[in-house]
Picture 1 (cartoon, rainbow, N blue to C red):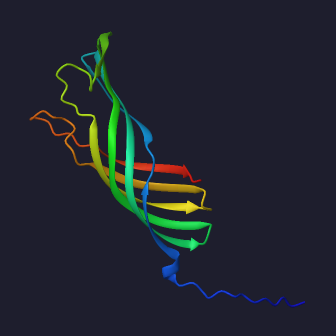
Picture 2 (cartoon, one colour):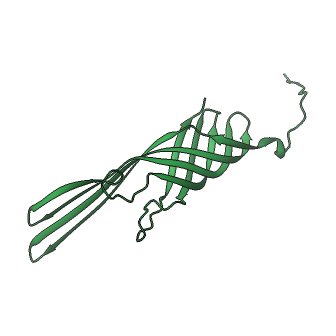
Picture 3 (tube, one colour):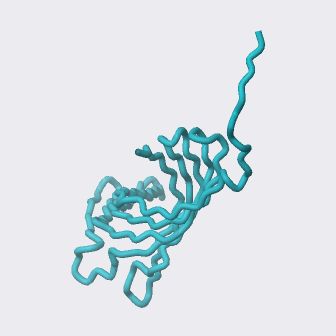
Length: 171
């Protein structure tokens, strides 16, 4: 048997599948941990050191995104960019070291220590690419660069920069 049907809709142009959205994603939390370890042995005497830095942030991104719907309601590709406001809730550095079996560990609060020049606020500029799947799941990857100097001393310049990968559930 033959199936005959009529569609009362004009074909869509590529322009109708494009969109531009300005979005403010609500605050999100991030936790960054970095670790640097070194060891050396000279004339049979072993020495090692380890530095671990842990930081906790709240971030408010304000992005403009431009997307192209490939399959309506099912698949949308997009690029995005814009500023993010970021506040560091906690920043601690732990240092440990040993020489010939003797050693110790110390912890430093980068934000609350006396004489600390580390500032908690930053403004990031960034961008990236992503895909929305079934209007429910968003996967994105991008890069952010902090434009403010995070250390207020004259002899150090500290900018935050990094790649990120995210998965979101849209509702």
